[in-house]
Image (cartoon, rainbow, N blue to C red; front, side, top):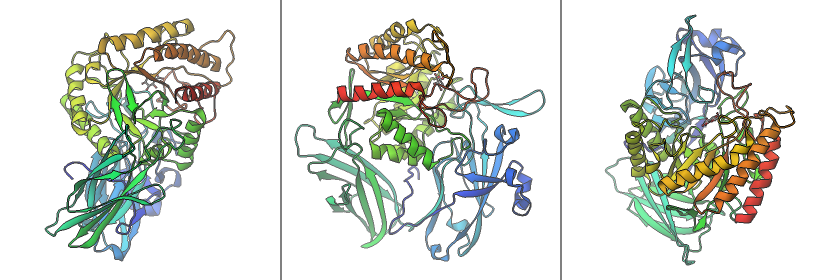
Length: 593
Ligand code: GCB
């Protein structure tokens, strides 16, 4: 679709869904793909989907592979699907994908961490076995989001190079689905709500639906269902755009701001063609209203104070592969620690992860994969805008998404970044004016050229770590100065988007010394003093430690196994820092709500 719409996969009375997850054939050698079913080696030629391929095998040549790999899966298509449109949908392929169905090119997509789909019925044989082949490439370039390059070592081996601080995992790392629709079907819905915070009259929910083209007459029956599936509003109309009023609505609140956080309604849409049902689609949404100005950021009229962290999609063996035990464990830890928000650093997270944020009332700072942008150029700008459009289309209806993060640590000290970020911020504003935008910024307010285009100033600051390592007494005054300088320059709300220190479990040194757990917690205590003082100044809206859990990076001499700035270890057990953070976040939640 020209507007890039992509609805989440859902089954309904008119839609069937089939999962293609499981073991796929895999090879780094294209010529082998035709004989792979008879000759395969179980270690090198079978790959779980969803998963990153890098850490599954014992072979460095798979972990460090540069370039294309091939995935193949056979699947049966029931003959009952013959008169349907059949779609194939990938939650994400890192980094770029080329999808062939029964030998015919069906679609291509670049930029990892974002979904794509295509209609494949003309390539299928119904009531028989079919095959899908996906070519997956992990090469990054000067114009890709994020950027990188292909290097050749003196031995002749190729290597993907990049400056960002997380492992460049690749593969089919999110679920793959086949699903059906009728040829006339709903292909997009956008839902917005305005909340009347001063009277009980309630909320106005507005929607805009679109469907595929037809010459026949179409109409919509729209129902709003509450959590118990009771109908609380209905519209029957030929208009794709309309409103529904909800009396005494239950608002969507963040965790610990209300006894019932994350309240979701469902918009149930029935599309009729000449009076007969053609499609039924159910889209969850929340009723909440964000406002932001020079000093504040509110939800449903209440000021937001962010208690959170940056995270990664990362775990042992799976890499960035979606894993339900892991994601539910992570939300249990988020609840335990009393946080209300996280940033999807440094790329969009799986839709299944975002669904839980909507349901549990965890606010999301939704970030595109633009990390460390430099060497600004037109191709980069185009891809950066594309990543924002696709992220917006995917997440526009999510109440959990409260801020768009348009970049992490871009090189905004460079003069040319000014025009670049003027265009990037205008692009996201052309799509959505209801949510504020931010950048997690590495530079000082004096060096930076992007702050003028942002609504909220995100500040990353590693005082007593990358700057003045070991000097804990510099943390408090430096964070104060730094945050105040940003506010003074732009008169906008400020949020600390990163601070922190690595810690190695079990390392003991007194007086405290970098890399010990005590050093990490002492650094936090000094930072808390600064945050408490800043909170009194009226424009400081939150704190996010780096990072929720330890995560894998490329091999460098500054990382022992992984980046260890986590409150939790990579296998999600608490470090000393997690207990300290739990105390603070719960105290803040009780004090402020
Ligand atoms: C940063 C980056 C983040 C790194 C972190 C670190 O500023 O935004 O991606 O992981 O520092 O620990 O170096």
